[in-house]
Structure formats: C-alpha cells, structure tokens
Amino acid sequence: MIFDRNATQAGTAVSHTQNTAPVTISQTGTYFVHYAATITPTSSTFPVSNLTNFTINGQTQSAGTSQIVFSANSPQRTVASLLFNVTSVPATLAVVSSGGTFLYSDASLNVFRVGDSSS
Image (cartoon, rainbow, N blue to C red; front, side, top):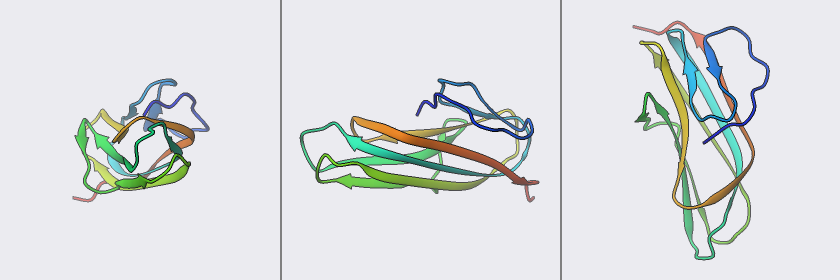
C-alpha cells in the first residue's frame, strides 16, 4: 500500500517518505502498528476476497492479518494490528493487500515504538 501523506511525528525512530509504501524503522525496540482503511472491490464477479497483512523486511508476518470476503460491490472497513520486535536496523515495514483490484479510502497507518526489545 502506498501512503500519500504523513501526519504528526514524534522522535526519529520511524520515518516515511510521502507517496511510497515502506515505513523505515531506525531504532531497535518493540513496536505496535495499526492499519485501517475502507475498501471497495472493483470486480463484477463475486465473491472476491481481500487479504491485508504486514511485512517486515519483505517477510510476511503471520499475525496481524485481516481478511474480508465481499459478496457485493459495497465498501467494507478493514483493520489490522501487529506488535513486533526490531532487532536490526534499518528495518522496513509495509502493508500488503492482495486478492483482487480494490479502491481504498480513509486509509491510515500508525506506528508506535512502545519500548525496548525483550531478549
């Protein structure tokens, strides 16, 4: 997913370049990410499924997955969250959406450093 804007940021552990997909994490620690969006399928063949998950350094994370099965061309709200550790920097975080062609609106991605990594 490409995010076109950045909101308020505190600190330098997390950065994002507008109109790009990856979020760069430059400090080790434990992080929490929350994604939300309204999704509308463009397909005329139903059912169609949308799967949203997170990748860290290109590796799909098994937790924090959201799936919606659409039976009609009506918008649905999706949310996904993940708590994860970063032990090597820089690390990249991305939201990956798959399963068909969809329109996205009101999308947001929040990333918080919540503490030091546990050993």
